[in-house]
Length: 312
Ligand code: NDP
Image (cartoon, rainbow, N blue to C red; front, side):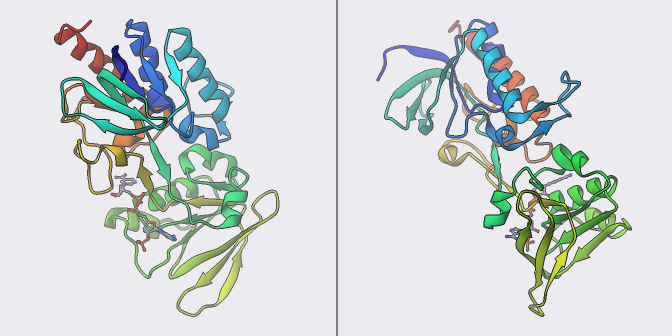
């Protein structure tokens, strides 16, 4: 175990983590940031990002995350490309264990471990990712303007994505695996009242068709076993997200889906000195810009905590 106690350790390297690092570093906290196993987070699997303010011509997700990283490094953030595999929040000083067995002691922890989209697990879905397959209509829907698309799922996210896409696309096919939707009544009503959305009940995806781009979707009715092909060029998977919060479940409050619970209006968790930001604590907005906003809040909350405890 190292003798040095760090002021601020950030877990995660998406927009929330890097924004927390920029603010913490500029406040002189010399933050240490662990990138995790997917450096850059979900934006690394996105092509063009056109809705992040300040980039009038758009930027690819990976380029944007390189910019975030450079900005964090410019202000003296130490970045380590490892995973944190365990935490101990039992004492006033928090203890983190890395995958290689290093032990880090830190006064504050900012959790920005994000969430991962759930996928169907089809080979064709993974192969056509970003060339027709997406898990975010708000991010990528614009690229399918005027085209026919399909949305898989029947929760609030799928209903919201289908209605969002219906404003841009002439035909939206919603693929629902049961004969009812899980989405709230109001969202279902919105779907049913949107003329260009067709709901396909009891329908599963067999394969996303196409070699280098999506050219259609092969679906199967699981009651009749009949298969058919939908003529679509976009395939949106909206079957839920899984927050990356497993290592905290012994220590922090979470909702049923595993999202961390913070004190309203702050990033404070129930453990003093531990703050949560980004998609790990947000199952509603889930945008890069909102994640960055809560990363900023977490750094400011950590800075105040350190000042109140006369640590820095
Ligand atoms: P949910 O877990 O609520 O829904 C997931 C949906 O995907 C279900 O309908 C499920 O089907 C379907 N599904 C899961 N696996 C498969 C599969 N392999 N093939 C086909 N379909 C599949 O996730 P959401 O992301 O929709 O919502 C998460 C939470 O966020 C909810 O609490 C929701 O209310 C909330 N939310 C709120 C919003 C708002 O208030 N504006 C907007 C978006 C989300 P089945 O029903 O058969 O299990």
